[in-house]
Figure 1 (spheres, rainbow, N blue to C red):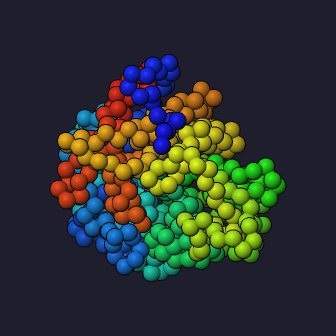
Figure 2: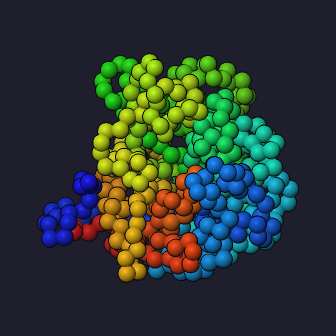
Figure 3: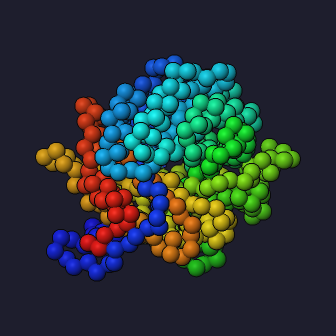
Length: 477
Ligand code: IFM
């Protein structure tokens, strides 16, 4: 299928102008601890919910686990050297909570913290700005056993963990993200159950979302107390939600999904309130009795930056009585109170995740956050695509992924021209890795990983991205 986002084929004249990004634009790539580190039982690390989940038969495709993953724990030095070779200005990684605070309570595990000290030193030694995410989904299993994110106490535990990491790394890390994609933790983890811990209860999902945000607010305060100069933010995954037609019922379906996917997080975090229409939509699911006085003030503690992860758009339509939902969204649903909304495919090109490729959606998303919510600096903290890659003569020519990046960087530039204070962009992902419930069957990396030999091969997209960074923009082709 031809891809309208692709740069022109060889020999075809491209009259698109070169695009230059603002000076100091932070070019990076991102990963997450459980997806790349491996060494699941080394250095004092204890299980997280993802260890338990991936070791439960039937939860992850082909029974894959993060036990070894990309073996980054043992290959960190050469991985950072590769980042330097690609010219990355910044590297966004996450800290494994059960590696640095086994069990989720009590003192730090010095050996676990040492790994991140060495990583940060290695990055700084190569002139790469470390960007640290505290929570990318690996809740220590004992905290789940005590109730998980639906339990209020998890928020306080998260703030303690934030302090412990800030005390150890705050002198060398400037950029801190509390949570990565709390929608996934709450609604995939406790709603549909396709992510760890695999629970399926709409009310629990809503409580989990609230306590994640409460933990975020407490962690922001803890980070500020430990390191007043830290630049602190949160990363949300956002989707433009478009009605399939102008029919009022479809428009209402879009409003409902936008409420759950986007405004459930944006409004408390950046306005200090839950949207009234969302609360009404959820009336049959929860009475919001878990929200205590002062929570929303804590959740909306002022930030320094906001991270946006963008992959695709949702196109939705009103329920059709008696019709089967789209397979991916089948019950148990990750859309409590709006389980019957239909997710419509438009027949436009998709990635290997079956996600529609929609670069204009990035412009829309960034503009919305800036125009409706905040003047804070924004960063695209993840953007990327999975495609089936082939190694031919030791090379991976991932033209589709390269085209995806090209189109989305043009969109990012358009957003900047429209006035969005976008300060950086992180490609997802630096390397192929454990794609959660899909195991190793989906490849998002700019660097190919052979999981048997652990050999890394930078794909065409990585070489191209290195050139983008070198030029601080996109060349005329
Ligand atoms: O791999 C994930 C990442 O962990 C969070 N954001 C989306 C990516 C692709 O699914």
